[in-house]
Amino acid sequence: RSFRWNLTASAARPNPQGSFHYGTIQTSRTLVLASSAARPDGGAPRPGTPVVRLNLHEFVEVVFQNTENEMQSWHLDGYDFWVVGYGDNGQWTEN
Image (cartoon, rainbow, N blue to C red; front, side):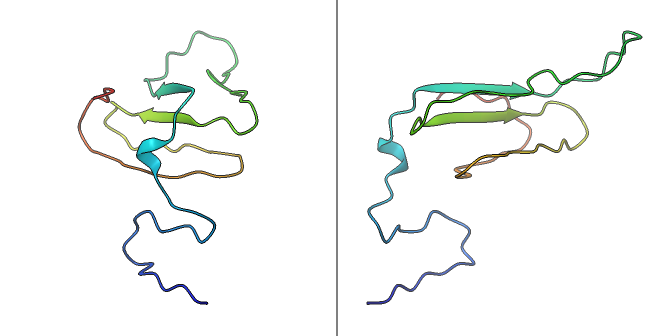
């Protein structure tokens, strides 16, 4: 048995272990992480959201909202991530 996929399409691909139905996955919560301009207060810099703890097998939707004029970089450290969409010049809403 073999699988053939167009890997240049950059879209969700079928999972050989089961169907891929992102729209039917029940998310337990949504985290919106928004960038903001630096506001030095004379102290040492510190991260605003250093660690987000999640439960095993929990599906969480994470939204990276950048309303700044510069591109922001984000670091994700975990097991499995899916990019399901991205946009430009907009404010994220649940709709």
